[in-house]
Image (cartoon, rainbow, N blue to C red; front, side):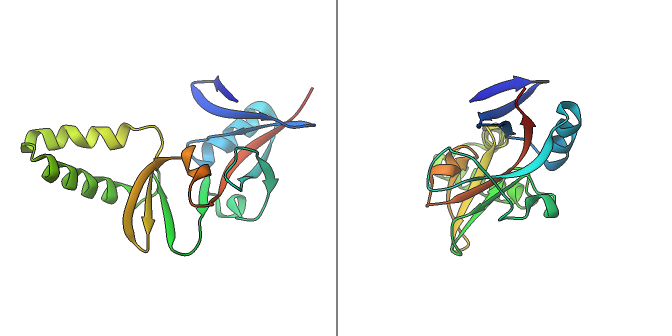
Length: 157
């Protein structure tokens, strides 16, 4: 499923007549990949807690120029590491962690390194309160979530 091309860690899915690539770090990265591979920009949905992609337009990612969106119902909100509000939540989580471990101030600065460098972290809120931190890949299996990612479709040779 995984491939590494041009220093990108992308997920590769082979369908009957096309190959789908997902896992882009932002919308522009996907657009550039379209040009490199002579592909087509598509929205890819992962539903029902599985890793089986389907091409769709349900979330409107292309029109909104988004690369990732999760719909897990009105009570849940998923904040991707590239979203503007993510840093605020990451900072708050590090403060809580520092208080719990009662670490000295200099270690608190080092602790922020953990969340910022975790693989594609997602903060999960339930009813506007912190619930957990997960990864983009694991979000496909949580809360009966519908995960939408921008993808690039390339016709099979």
